[in-house]
Image 1 (tube, helix red, strand yellow):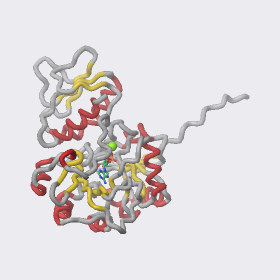
Image 2 (cartoon, rainbow, N blue to C red):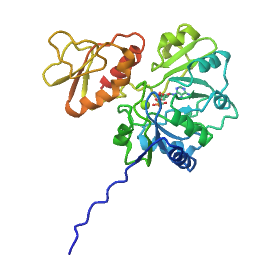
Image 3 (cartoon, rainbow, N blue to C red):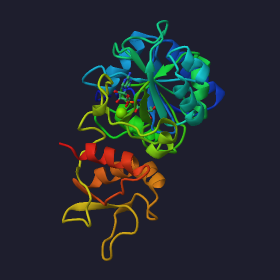
Image 4 (tube, rainbow, N blue to C red):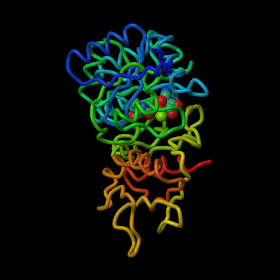
Length: 324
Ligand code: TXA
Ligand code: MG
């Protein structure tokens, strides 16, 4: 009997749970220089030992990032963060109020900071946050080192908010993904550089501007602050395959309508970010719904989302997703 040779199936990532044995396995892989898909409350990250240049380089290779953007380093707690960066009193207050949670602080690197220069792209600063996800916090504690992690998607594509999204994009490039469920916030962290004279918002995100401004006063745009770098804010980013048309009142022929709030009379929304017009609910649904519509449609019309609270970050992602 002859057998037809079968193509060897590409290696696929294994999706594991959050048991102590699962976390121990992920920690061993990371300590051996490997990369692991990890859940956070914002989006899934692609994590590696931030102190290893080779491990950090493997993240860039897996993502297919065109250039070496600096990465966020994820810490177990404020004490670990203080071994990496200089905390001003304001930075300390922000960490105490917002951590664990979706606020990333860009701070001066300490001279003895052990994080690889590749992770911070040779900058004198470092981006830090303590994620609010028990499994990933246990992983960081078990590794005992900060984890560098960008969002776990191919460069420019939609960020993943489920373990299955990570597997769909990177499944043949990584070995392990920890399934920590659907991301609670669904949008990346807000990135702030709380400088001496002016605090800058480098990226709107899942922590709303007005909550941060209670501590910092009015936040400046990156352009306003000379000397503060905001690399990685690519014009086209977070993009589905389909064309996006924003601030749409209804769908044209061939478009799927993605609603926000009650749709106008006579208009049917294919999906609704939040039927009750709640921005937090819309943020949590945004990337997953764009993925779903992307499977069936070449064009997506998106209802207007008011630019208040989390609407600022939702509109930022939509505009980048719509850019050509
Ligand atoms: O919610 C999040 O922030 C997710 C999860 C996984 O934590 N991470 C994430 O990482 O979105 P990433 O690599 O996709 O975005 C990191 C952003 C980039 O725009 C990068 O340029 C900026 O942070 N960044 C990192 N270090 C910086 C630094 N030292 N100065 C200025 N910007 C920095
Ligand atoms: Mg990203």
